[in-house]
Every structure is written in C-alpha cells, then in structure tokens.
Image 1 (cartoon, rainbow, N blue to C red):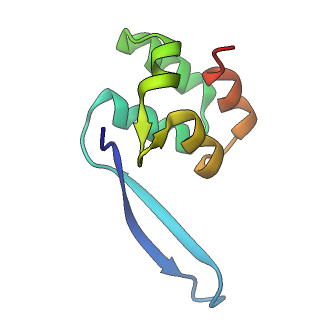
Image 2: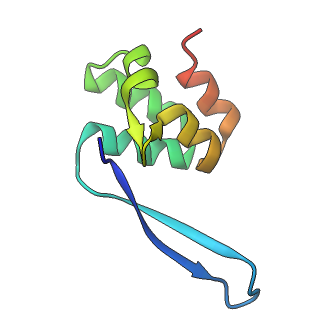
Image 3: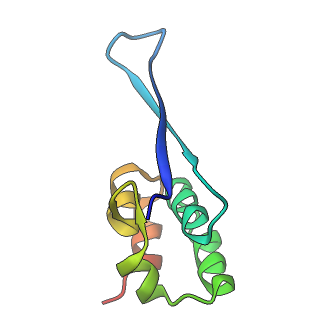
Length: 92
C-alpha cells in the first residue's frame, strides 16, 4: 500500500549539511492516517484511530505499510516519541 510519499527534502539555510524531510499523506485512507499519526508519535491518537477503524492492533502492526516498510519500522526510523509508539504497536 502506498500511504505516504516523500514530498520534499530541503537543505537548511543555516547549515549545508542539515536536511528536513516532510511527509504528506497521498490519500485519506485509514492506513495513510495511521502512518501520519506514527510520524507524530501520538500514542493516544494511534490507539483511538486503530480502535475507530475496526482494525486490530496486530493487523495494523503486521500489515500496514508506510513508504514500503511496516508501520512499526517506519515510526521507529522517522517518527517522534518512539518509545510510546513502540508500546502501542507492540504485539508480543
């Protein structure tokens, strides 16, 4: 599933080495919403979105992909508040 696309990578005007990556949902699907929440690292919003979507936490953790990687891996690599997201998406 193609949920989020890399929109812009810009060099910071203050430093030639600093880069900012911005993401934008490509549609309004549940999966795209989950990916954007994973980036923000909002555990409560993730829990609420999973619950309201009717999907299971296990399904989301194992089947939802963001930019070609699992939502868990995506949130660990690019997201904020990694520890909280790990707790929400943990299925062990």
